[in-house]
Length: 236
Image (cartoon, rainbow, N blue to C red):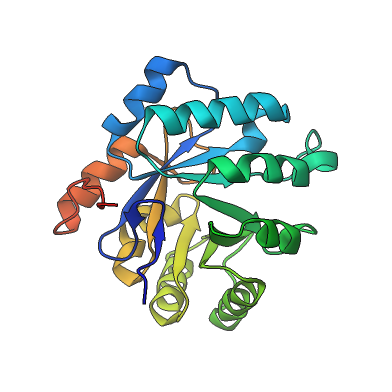
């Protein structure tokens, strides 16, 4: 069986770090991205605006300047609501993976259009951490939609919430990214890979979700706790 990967980066051997690109960067800062130690980039198109030509030019510049595979993410906003599918169609040729929400009205369309790309189907609960049965149900639904990777981010109100998410991650039979959000969940950014989570997200300048850590801090922590991590990149 072919190993699960996003672009040239193989998943599952060691934890991977995803740097979130949420603003347009100049050529110098694009060139500096690889020095952060990140393995992958998430291009948050929804935070970059809805001007499709500008998005495509920017992602193309990133791909030509770095060797980092890219995840294309387009969360729904008031600005992009009417043309979100058009944005996905435009950026898919430039990225190595896409992330679409499980309950999005265009989820099936996006997945059908993303042939040859790694598909992440995500669920975000900013209020609570569901019970394990519910979490397993989300994962099964996401896989049924065509997910290569299931991503579940849930708000942790207590340490028990974090423990429950870790238990679910250790039991989940599908490739998974599990994130506990909020102050209690911050530890999951580093420890979730122990329980099977494939990668973790860090920010470049400011957090875009509760409890996120900067990329440099994540890399430092992962080097300390995971033998063989070292910020290495997988060979193509």
